[in-house]
Image 1 (cartoon, rainbow, N blue to C red):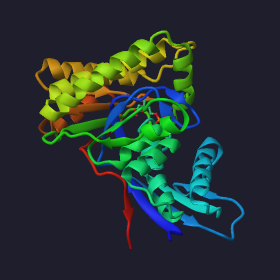
Image 2: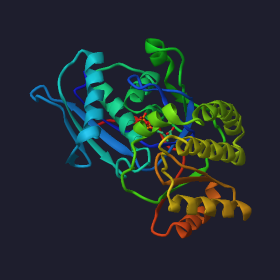
Image 3: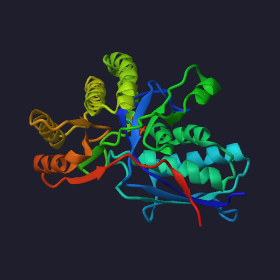
Length: 330
Ligand code: DP6
């Protein structure tokens, strides 16, 4: 079974954020998170087993992967080998539509595609829940990219095997909710601090972390009902405050972690102006300066124009809810 497989996965953007790990080895989050999978910027990954090779070969956008990126991929392949009992090295070829590490969750689409292609190549028989648990071991946010539209990643409970079993992603119903997410790529360079290091520092040193985690639980419950109602204003308000709260925990870390740049703040101002002009638009930011603006699809062009005006030179991509990771056949 298996031997070679190709999978495609899309990034997801969290409306309720994951920030902080309870278990760094098993990649168990402290808090539940909830996201929207996008229909743009896919990652395509092929995994081919090579019994004649001595080590894994990892290529990212046509160049050999190095350092931390290579290590994360080979650690993940090691996990696939332990699970499958097949110890052959692999050739991994990954193509991204955006630069890695630029804060557009390319680790989410990357590890979702790698989990799906890798499980197929090594002959692991996993359902989607199992695949989401597996993807989590690569990058916790990747667990959510296994699913179409809106998905929750459960932080689970307990430790060890109990925690591992309990931490997986699943779809969240939002039957009549099909908004636009206008993504402003204000800076496509690599981030200053990796999210992994920044999370650790925040959990260990930020006096605001626990308060945010507690408020995030309440935000999640409200978010579920807002999604069921298809209420863009409620979804947007909850997502915006949850993201700003997460960034506040980082700003209070010692030393502070600050991902937001002057261009980020300029875009946030333009979002406030849109709202005062009667255009519902709400912002969320991750481990980088880029801003994602949630709005009605009918307002997306106007929002994109406002964002471009606020951060001249930024690239803007408009997304909708998109598909979960899938294997490519043929
Ligand atoms: C701010 O999933 O990239 O985007 O699990 O260490 O790989 P690792 O971190 P990662 O962190 C994502 C954090 C976030 C919020 C989110 O997507 O929930």
